[in-house]
Image (cartoon, rainbow, N blue to C red; front, top):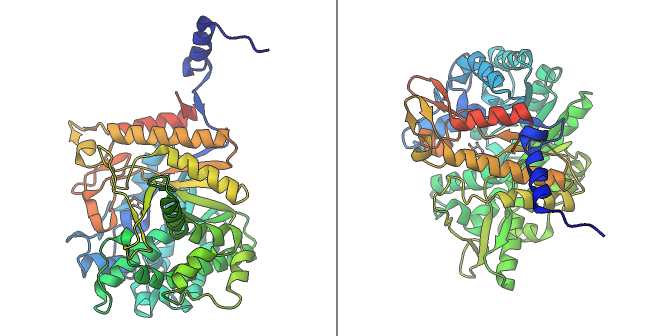
Length: 483
Ligand code: IFM
């Protein structure tokens, strides 16, 4: 029989568990990797320099005014300041830097002739990182399709699979000797379905405008499923190419995963949550980790549009399982049944947080739940958190006398790391955490009005200033955990 501990002994045990006595309370595994993430369009700038071609985002911001008049033509100018930025990452102790390649910088027309200056930039960035002891993790596609390819039909055409494969091969051959972590795509649900679906609906006079991106009418959303299928196929083909080159790194994909919770305990809300989970999560998790599509979502989409799945596609997808799954987590979805909703008869609840974050409800348990669920339902895959982070609004990012006391971000990061730690303790094979983002940057249609950085960027002067959260993160890495 276990003896009950006296309160005095319990107090000693508790204080010995603290950092002063035996190391941090939340200690991560020895080989855990701490990183930060960015994407080319959001940080590089130099939008038309050294032979770079246009991307669709150059068009969206410069010609279509989708970011309220702002552009990322300069962004945080990382193209010119990468040495300074790598030095900053090193000072923070960052162990891996996840960045993306701008396809149109390497292949201005998307296919065909390579731009040597563009390739050289990524080669220099990789060398600079390695010299600083930082492992590069390269995302091949973070939403910036070359405009030339968009003009040829973009991701809607099946040819896009081979365009991507050609580009991927060029990158593997150029950097594969020095880069050991590759991510094919970033967040297919958010970009291929939601963003591109909303933009398509907004620009096409034959399509009724979308009321709200996450409440997109079923027929518009289903019309994007073919794009997402081409991404899945291109992902699998790129893995096949990577392996055929005999390179020995790891290759995976990054999915945005949002656990869907029913708003009430009614059966109808439970069914609605299953649909939301299918649309956002299973539609991607299943092909990537099981080599199949979930039948329920396939039926929902096929009722409205051709999803584009052809003979042999599923074999290619199934034969090329990713080495790891990248998970981006920001918030959960609370779902209720709403029979009259044109969005598959479901609706999500508005965020009721007192201090709302840009990317939805703050709910660290959602991260724990989704990690446990992926571990359980998909055969314990190797998982990297490839994005997690917070933007709360100007109050949290106010620069006062050269300091930024971003209390809400600090709290957000800490609580999500505790959730990740708990999942590791419970057996999840989680080996990396990339914070989004090291630097404030250009947040797509919201431009510079949404800040997610550990480091404040003055967009006029390009000065970088560490926020309080940056000092926290530095200490977490140094101690491989925290109290
Ligand atoms: O900035 C984005 C990133 O490009 C994709 N994931 C979410 C981030 C914050 O909204």
